[in-house]
Length: 158
Image 1: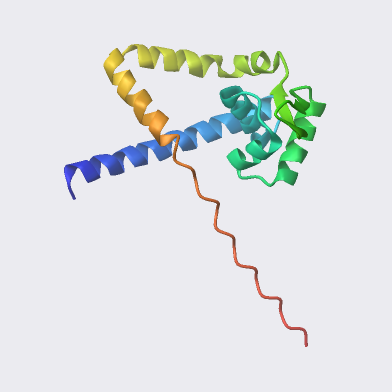
Image 2 (image 1 turned 135 degrees about the vertical axis):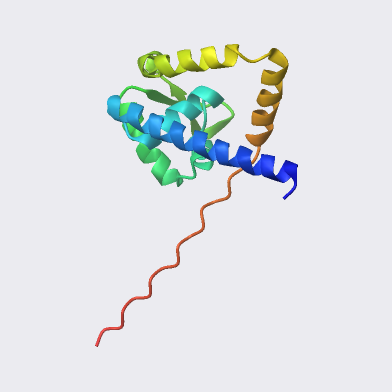
């Protein structure tokens, strides 16, 4: 195996390890704030991407539009989001984070953010620029829809 291939394989391995850790951490935070992980990820997406239509949230999460509606109902009831008419399309809505939602979550991420700041401070700017460029490009990769499981054949009745 070439050095580049082995380095790429090691990088993918470490990315998967990092992603697993982030998912598990976010699940613990979601539990602490009385939310499920999917709802928490929708809040993160709204923070990262700004106000979104339910259709765009469905596209980003892989949920159905009906599933997104259920999530938004829960988040709206809990006071985390609000729905407003879409100024670009009067037939749809745009979902906004409510003021204070991120501040409420911030305390749960303060320790890990402090560790991340200290970790990143140890790297020269040019290396951080390379990593930022890599992550920016990797975030353009769209994950394919999960393969549908074949339905189990119904047992023939006797």
